[in-house]
Image (cartoon, each protein chain N blue to C red):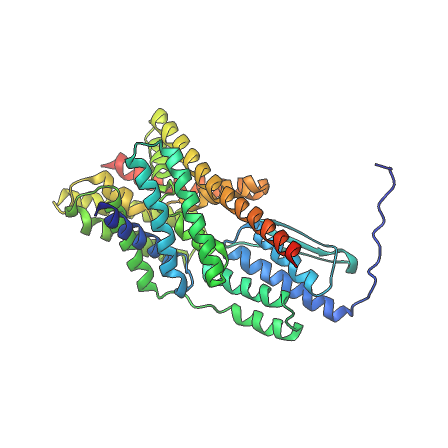
Amino acid sequence: MIYFYQFVLSFFASASFGVLFNAPRKALASCGVTGAFGWLVFYACREAGMDLILATYLGAIALSMIAIFYSRHKRMPIIAFITCGIIPLVPGGLAYNAMRHVVLKDYMTALEYGFEAALISLAIAMGIISTEMIDQVLQAVRKKLKKERV
Amino acid sequence: MSGELEVMEAPDKVLSEDFVRDVFYIAVNCGKMLLESGAETYRIEDTMLRIASSYGIENAQVFVTPTVIIFSMNDYALTQTVRIDERANNLEKIMSVNELSRRISAGLPLKRAISSLEKIHNTDFFPFWLVVLSGGAIGFLFLLLFDGTAADLPAAFIAGAGGVFIMEGIQRYTRVKFFTEFFAALYIAVVSIALVESGYGTMLDTIIIAGVMPLVPGVLITNAIREMIRGHLMAGVIKGAEAALTAIAIGAGVGLVFLLV
């Protein structure tokens, strides 16, 4: 039940960001689903006691798999789904917190938040890129197999 | 290295100059629209080169950073530099340009490509009230995701919607991004503190974080690192600096209120 609740929340959060980013209207729902799946994987990993960075990485992998599926299915560039889909995972709050502590001259706390934000966004970027790379390799292999069969 | 200069060979089949100029026009405009809509660097470079090569123009070179596009067709001695001042996320436009480039690769005639390029310029936007409303919804939803209490929901909604309203409102009059985010954050902090003081909210920090979520540069940071991993170091550094500046603006806006109260 709690998972369903989290799914609904992150679905609407991603879709609302889709409106801010002027996403194509027919892609809004799929943007929401992409974001919700990434968040669910992240949430489940966190509940299982996994490390924050690792959970983010797994969440990013999950959401980019969904995004690749949607980009094939709807024939749209993958960036539309990725940009909205990473919203729930993205360390915006941490970056804000880091800078707020800088302004309040609490430098040590600011550093802590800042490094965490950097690591989390690195994890998201690595998750997206590793999924894309695996997908490219799979496509190449599939093409090769097709050629050999002909 | 032999030490000799590499001589570029002239193209085998010579295309008419008007044709080449039209292709150049299409490629540059597609790249410009993509960059202004916030596409990744590799997508822009790939699209421009693909358009050139699908009309039979080889040996084109392109260099893209978040502020400038340099595009050359070396065989025809054509080069143009395009300066980009404004960038915003507009996924609809990226999708339209992408579709156009797909059709061009599939063999769209040049004249029809130009006419559909001109149609892309006026893509629809979501109505302003819906954008503001979704800003409020973002505040509302992130408050719940951050385990806020139900009593704070109206405050988070007001803060989020107002922040987006101010940001989008100021953006129509000035181009200095720093101040739009600064004033939006300032407003969010003032409203949140006022609401908490008058008893309409309980957890001040959670309300403010939920309220600034629509402004915060989380996607920008992630995109910056993605660009760097892909090898576009310059684009990554520029986007990272932009993200840091945005975060400072928001932090300063909120921090100022905290210092004064």
